[in-house]
Length: 272
Length: 338
Image (cartoon, rainbow over all chains, first blue to last red; front, side, top):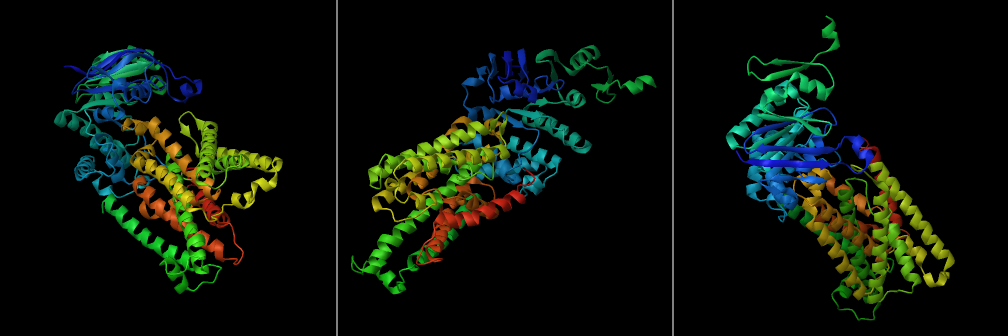
């Protein structure tokens, strides 16, 4: 399959040291490719460079050396709106100071398709409604975001990303605010979007087991470098994870899916 | 109701209110003219030299126009600064931008620029430069990696405001006071009649700033989600911020050049409108233009009549309304975000 996204020897460092401490970390010589139609996961410990990778992909920051390509074209040559028609991001949390309604938020996803338009068209509104329906927030359309629970906010943000009609859907820690039921529903929705709409999905997550279950392939980052790329079974191996995360782990197999399941080897369990 | 229809409805209501307030402003005043003589003057059926004609057409009408322009411009600048800084309490006076513009005006007056159109343009250029300087200084002081914090921005605004106010005091002290006639009255915000040609220039500059911000209204909505989110939705955030920054400074500078620094209009009006219309800047920018006009016109009409035949500066009235309003916002709605 041809690659949709390519990271080719990408190196990046934040200029100010305080920014480095804040959570944006450096990357060194990162190379991997995401094929069209695949569900791809980025995993790694805190400060491994996951968020930086996402910022590079969406041109929030620019690579020092190396190149990020979309469909073979360097993304620095693309207009912001053009890139946003191809890549949509579901961020970790919603903004606070100005309480927009869910519908207003979702309609914002239509911006890159007609940046010159002042008000959205009827077509835009229909697409926004469909997106809210798909993520189960249509009944919340008129509510301000601040009145929503963490899980509802997350699904509203996902609806906005769907309204963008992207080829690549990027999710930054999608289940961090969700309880088990919505985690399962989110995973199911991602798989549905991938299977039915052929949408490529990039999942950035702490949750190794979620990544193992839903992703076709994973890249494991450690200290700003690629520790390993491949299918979950090849990446989530005990020795690899222990060297990257710096703690003892147990890797089992999920009897239902046959995918790896990673657990910390808690010191207390070792004693028992 | 779609956003477009809500905007049309809101503008229709505000336009009706503006007509009523403008009529009140034209018919009420210390000259004690009867409504019939004011109407006669407005219809052009009074002699050009008659008292009712001079009072209505040369004193009250230009003042009404100036108040509507200044109020509208300040309210739109408030919406712009709030969107730009993602800070609901930002406003030209609170951010010290008005003081920077006032410094520019005082400097221009020292250079001898007065009220003819060309000279007024010169004053406006000085005021614009002062506004840009102050806004730039506030931004540089307050910016930290990851954005602007609400508290730091307000403090930076206060500091920059104090600095420019002190600079003005220094200028006034070292320059012959007579050359700066009426500067103290002007510094309180003052809608003294402006000659028609200068009024036209005022309108032109204000509309230019308004147009730039109106064009950016949809993108300002996206910027409210955070700069990173806005970029990811396709906004060229750098260009947007530069455009809105320049336009808001232009509006502030223009108002200060023609009427002096009038505070809090940019805070009170946008927040009252948000209470009714919500957060959409595409609704707020056009309605702030009309709503700001109404607010300042009402304040000025009050300023002219409350201690008649003497007159208060309109800035005093807006500050009396605005300061408690600021405290109210600080203590209630935005307490959690501070």
